[in-house]
Image 1 (cartoon, one colour):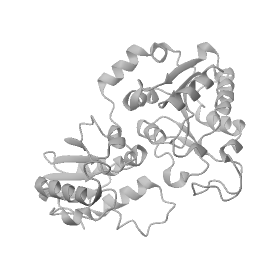
Image 2: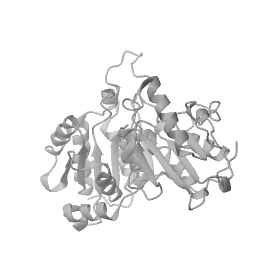
Image 3: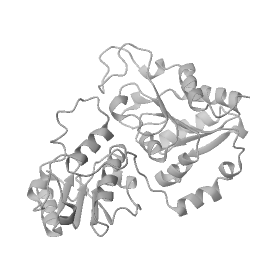
Length: 342
């Protein structure tokens, strides 16, 4: 199916549930927005957890919560969703979850999102898969970057509240650590003591300013344990819920390096363009790794890594602890070539 933009005045896109997954669709959606007429009305329905990936962005006319665990749960919830879609009289509907819902929408164009990419190799990156599908609809691919909108208000807040970033000497790097991870996958986390060791090496070699992030109470505690092991003048506490995704994005945009476990934040880093060292064990970096920015992937020094499952079948516990600090530091050095060592 190829869409004719002259026939498209109203668009509905139903988004994905996870923040990281939603961010990985933004390159494809950005191309679609650039292709359509300027007066085309663009609506996004996004599950609550993923709304921060797109809210506030002037590219989208409306962003609405689509809670499949609440108002739209179960069979009757799907019926309510279909009724609302049909009432909206959309010309184009895309369901990024690859369900059959578009077939009942009454839209002029109702392609099934996942159908065209089903035969692609599993190793192809998720962003590439999304771009492939949007391209098959006749949308020219004029850019391949992820997108995350940062308002002037957020930029001004960071400038006013974090003078360390505004006034620091540019010959020394600002590096952000993310020692936390998806609460459902604690096995994806590199040990906090290794982050602290890495931080002290970077301080010694580059006199780096190290910021440590962490949103949940557990992550905030882990961040503070790392910060306590760093010199006071070289540490910056960025943990806690007061940061929020948009403020974090502005902070990452001013960083020289980001070292992180495999979480949705790694895709935020790709969107704002910060060089990134991604730490991967029980996950798939070839499909869900950084995209578009300068980056390095580090995996455990094990024959089974990186693996594909939630449960280890090799009998090796805590595989992330097999990633050595020296190996991660070497990757950091490759991305910090513009800074001289002290």
